Amino acid sequence: MKTFIKVLTYVVFPIAIILLIYLNYDSVMQPVRFQKEVDRRSAVAIDRLISIRTLQEAYKESNRRFLSTTDSLIDFYKNGKITIVRQIGSMDDSLAVAEGRVSRDSIDILVRDTLLKGKGAIIDSISFIPYSGGKRVQMQSVIRKVSGIEIPLFEAVMPYDDLLKGLDHQLIVNLKAEREDMGQYAGLKVGDIDNPNNNAGNWE
Image 1: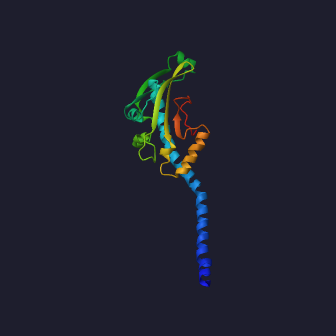
Image 2: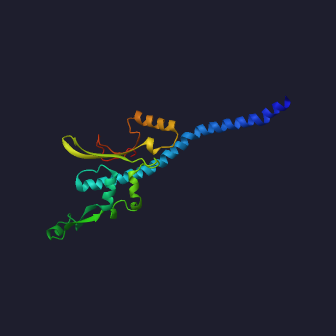
Image 3: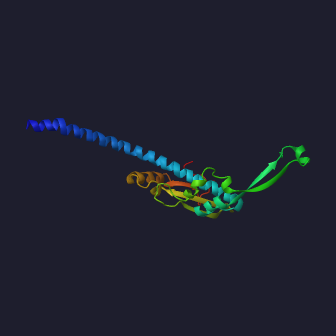
């Protein structure tokens, strides 16, 4: 009996205490680790959404509408051109204007030579939600009447269910519920086809 008590006192109880301390620590740290991973994945996703917005806005500048698919955006990046207006002299210089020394001309340059510099090698990745196992970015574009004026709009979204794939399910559910309670999209989103927002991202 004494031996049994000694085993409990010197072996079982210390192990049980250490296990309880570990479980308590792990339960406290789990949300911290989750948020750290959310932030890490979000940074990659936001970079892709910003690239999408950059290409969309460049396309709209020449075509007065947005594209509906990321494949079209990639083709625009690889094969499209944009017009750059170049001014010689200053319109504020009235003498130069009077003497005809101020002029403007326009040149067409390849999109890939001016936009998203340094990202050409990974341009195809903008179609996909990072860490999702191949899920595609959901993108739409429309022409909508706002105050009687037709305005082109677009949105590109990455739902948390895809972006946070493989993380703690309950913590994902909690994060989504928190966003929805605040009337916010449960994921990352740039632009809005229902409420014009100047192509802002919901992280900004």
